[in-house]
Length: 340
Ligand SMILES: [Zn+2]
Image 1 (cartoon, protein in one colour):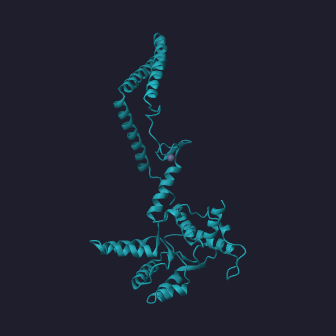
Image 2 (cartoon, rainbow, N blue to C red):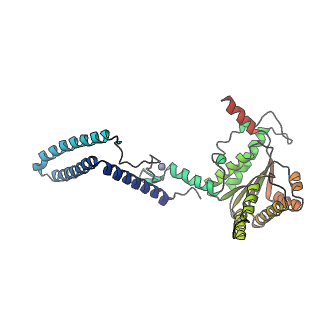
Image 3 (cartoon, rainbow, N blue to C red):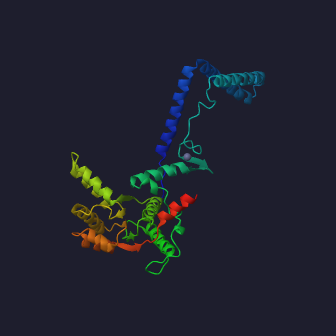
């Protein structure tokens, strides 16, 4: 499903802008009665002129002189009106709504070649809403496969498999991109476990995946596991905690694609372990993919969760391709910023 255009909301925005402008006009006209007088007189003259033009069109030649005189009068009054505005420091365009988007005047659509097209502002608004719904953090909003600069990965350092870091990153990016392109809710999609050291660009890659899912109209949820646990814990202090906890778990269990960033930064408690098992086991049985990133090797992750570890990661390895991202993108980006 491609990006869809929500016309009601955008048209509502345009209507709001018109109402805002109307309020402004009223306020100015109340404050400066001379401006209002000039404006309404000018309008009545313009109406009269329009009617005269219609009668001229109907070949009523007698009105020709009257029309010419009226035109002159309108011009004079217009000058007077503009002079008044200038004297009161009122901008000439005070009656114009202030548009957020000059291209579509906040209607979200543009009429071109006999058809309505979705304006880029409406596409952006929709994208932002979907990013917010998916819980994608602000710093990943502009992460896309097209924008990713893989030159940050060293070409002169080699991974255990013999590939250099850049080739390795290219391979992983292409697998991640093809995960999104091939994803189909009716078929089993193998997810990804992306292991890599701090600063290797794992979160950025998850951002690319999230934004590409938006392009395909696929729902996702991005979580940092420690935040999720915190969120669940905080529901215990409220009045009807069970429904809330259930709701939170339901979302991460049911969402078509779940992105778990930075697994392993949470405290390795029994609660963390059993909750993770619940989520993973549920998704495993429903054949819903997980994209997971972590600083830890699978072996170390297993050791972090002593009780459920073996079962959790057996499931995970069955469901996912295991990939190791090498390199330190963060340092490169900081160096680049300092040089610039
Ligand atoms: Zn627009």
